[in-house]
Amino acid sequence: MMYGFYKSGRMEQRVVFDIFYRMNPCDNGYVICAGLEQAVVYLRNLRFYPEEIAYLRSLGIFDEGFLKELEMFRFTGTVYAIPEGTVVFPQEPLLRLEGRIFELQLVESALLCFINHQSLIATKAARIVQATRGVLVEDAHPTSEFGLRRAQNGDAAVFGARAAYIGGCTSTSNVVAGYNFSIPVSGTQAHSWIQSFDSELEAFRAYVDAFPNRAVLLVDTYDVLRSGVPNAIRVGRELREKGFDLLGVRIDSGDLAYLSKAARKLLDEAGFQQTQIIASDDLDEDTIRDLMVQGAKIDGFGVGTALITAKGCPALGGVYKLAAEEKDGRFIPRIKVSENPLKVTNPGKKKVIRFYVGNKASADLIMLDEEAIPQGEPVTLFDPVHTYKRKTIYQYTVRELLIPVIVDGDIVYELPAVEEIRSFAQQELATLSSETLRPKNPHTYHVDLSLPLWELKRELMARMRTAGAN
Ligand SMILES: Nc1ncnc2c1ncn2[C@@H]1O[C@H](COP(=O)(O)OP(=O)(O)OP(=O)(O)O)[C@@H](O)[C@H]1O
Ligand SMILES: O=P(O)(O)OC[C@H]1O[C@H](OP(=O)(O)OP(=O)(O)O)[C@H](O)[C@@H]1O
Ligand SMILES: O=C(O)c1cccnc1
Image 1 (cartoon, rainbow, N blue to C red):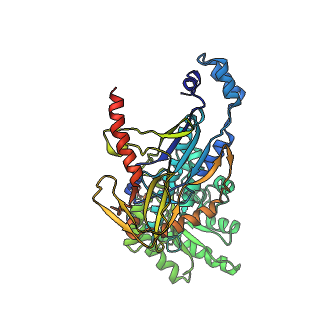
Image 2 (cartoon, rainbow, N blue to C red):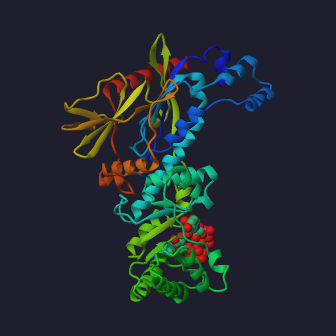
């Protein structure tokens, strides 16, 4: 397409693209937006290197003038984005890009990859953490991301660990992610550690020698209740003589509810009330919720496969759609019409505002960029499909969600630390009602269109049906 724009003299045509998604993944009531930092870094560093241009030349498809354009290529567009950690909903632009069609068309798939992947994993993590006891991490049990070995590849593991932390995990076992993003790392040991010693007891002793104040012993290699926990208690007693406390045991197979209760009893009777029980073994939000219902005595979870692959909801369907095109110095709205009403795009250069009543998010409104933001007067919102469904909001505050991140190719936004994004995501979750937060059949949060945008959409749909037919 870039070559086509170059050949037809349309390279410099200015356009607006939106990134948005149409349905929440996992039947969830919201998505936690993530991946913006990687998108920004990608845009900043985007260029064509000599070897890449040589490869494109070798294809024998492109003329030298075009390859020269690629050689000089830099991203010069403007990006507005919803900050990472924000809870977002279907249809609303998460990123709005303005620039030359030559460059904005190039970046579609890469941007979608960053935003779709991390937003999906952050959302999955929030669901898993919520299942451990409550949606906010202050109520939840610590949950460590264990997924590296099961991720679809290395980038998915590292950026997935970042997103999992944003979504509420307490730590990751992926030390590269810890290094890259300054997020907490934690880990226990594998069955191979235990197997590599002549006895479980020796294995435990050697481990606590190395990590006297942070040892979590894997107790299920041979027999949790007859061998693993009794040996852990023995080593715990020896540790105490050296002035340390055994931090925990990990159970990685069997009936986790039954074994955790029995292990708790053994540990408590031996005076190890502070020693935690960590569970892992193909856990996901459903199994964790089930374990909690069964009264499992589990203090923390390690979750790998289901988290890093977003089991059950393997992709977030974010899309990149042309919304406007510049003509004579003005942006002319563009629409994509479809038989499926969900797939008809919202035309024009837009912004998104969120209404808060008290400290709860009440509804979002997608508006045309030139519209004034309501300043406190009562606002009546209507469902864009079932327009008789209306709601008037009084006594609200408003927040504009899209903020400038890159202006004319320059980064104008200070990228927050991941720790900060995670705290922000927690604040964001606290603004949702329990009905929106529930993991099954959640209440659908209202995302409405302003009247001018709704009217523009209807007009363009009618016009483009006729124009398209011609
Ligand atoms: N009390 C429980 N209620 C519901 N699910 C459980 C309970 N205990 C364990 N599970 C889940 O059941 C599954 C058991 O898996 P599986 O049949 O492979 O047995 P296992 O004990 O893990 O054996 P191994 O890991 O040695 O192959 C895991 O996904 C685990 O998380
Ligand atoms: O179960 P997940 O949620 O994916 O978490 C990661 C798993 O990876 C490790 O074992 P591994 O899978 O290597 O071996 P195992 O299945 O035999 O325990 C660990 O002990 C967990 O069980
Ligand atoms: O630290 C652990 O015990 C761990 C980490 C990743 C995968 N499985 C286990």
